Length: 251
Ligand SMILES: C[S@@+](CC[C@H](N)C(=O)[O-])C[C@H]1O[C@@H](n2cnc3c(N)ncnc32)[C@H](O)[C@@H]1O
Image 1 (tube, rainbow, N blue to C red):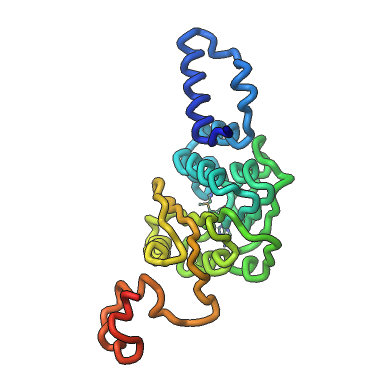
Image 2: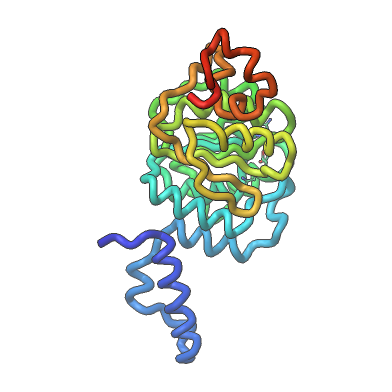
């Protein structure tokens, strides 16, 4: 049976510890060689890098580890992200095709492109503010895995969400980073109440959601009263009973 990435990492760490106690830390046993996985190697490498590996602030190792776990769990062939950094390097070793919407400002793009573990053949960079590039982009295939970690002001993460979320297949993953920033936190709170998403976990400041079977909420309509967040927090529920029916907020 195929072992998951997490099991392989755990097995690998165990073997390294065993070798260290047996005084053979420099030898690579046949099992470890057989286990060689570029994504795990990229993750191992990222763990050893300094905190501000690029000047926009990179994801931490615990988040990268869960990205790898979930990307593998849902079977990631096509992925996309806004912003770039360690996540790009990692996903370039997991997905068959990864699309990265980022800007050529600061040094994150250049650092990624120069990184030894970056698998350039699998990545399509779309350069420019995602506010402009995403609406013009047409995706060829449904997305299995999406990370929103580009620009964080209002309503930019929301815009990234607007253009990316209809592309995510059922069972696919959506990650929102920096949920401690109020604007991203607001998006996070709305998604937690949305039927389209199952909140899987938060790792540090990154939220992991899985697309449910619920139909896509009409991206061209209004129907705000059908959204879980509004049903829960609307302060004047009774005022709409004549229009929407008894206990409309519980339906
Ligand atoms: C927090 S960093 C991303 C960190 C990355 N996920 C990692 O694992 O290291 C934010 C990224 O967003 C990019 N960015 C900034 N403004 C952007 C915009 N308007 N559209 C797309 N990307 C943008 C930055 O250049 C940077 O690469």
